[in-house]
Image 1 (spheres, rainbow, N blue to C red):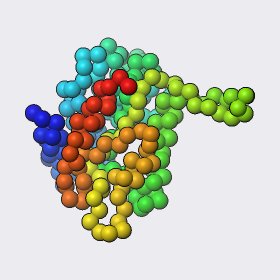
Image 2 (cartoon, rainbow, N blue to C red):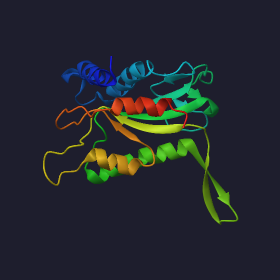
Image 3 (cartoon, helix red, strand yellow):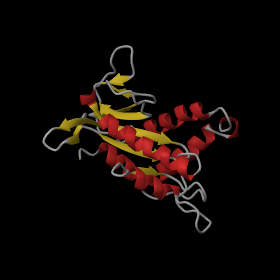
Length: 204
């Protein structure tokens, strides 16, 4: 199966699992559980033997932020009685959305910035540098971060409408955002799944 076919299959499977009975008010947490599981199932097919994906709802040790998925060393185990993994065993943290971030444009931007801030808090610590008289970021863990949405608006139909995909990418930088489908036209965004897999499996 090609990456494009797999991307299409992922979208169809998620849509079938989260049909109209499971998409309305009150089903948000259920969707937030199902979508990461589907993505993890397909992503694990491509991971080298030294890596595996864990989640949903996992943590980095000593960091309070919850992540949907994490790529960890294949022999890594959570700390006993928790879903938190030692920082040195984590390679990538992943935020997952089914239909991007909801809200008016101001709320949308605030929520996306919060995702970026969560990535920063997880991956870096602030240290006061007395020579520079300010705080500097230092890596907390040797890992990356990524955002992936099953669908989001990337080609708005009306002139002047917001391109939420582009806004997400701009606000999340330097962290990458991967969007599998345009939510307005249901058009597959070619190569996004393949790029996501390449990113989470690369050592750089």
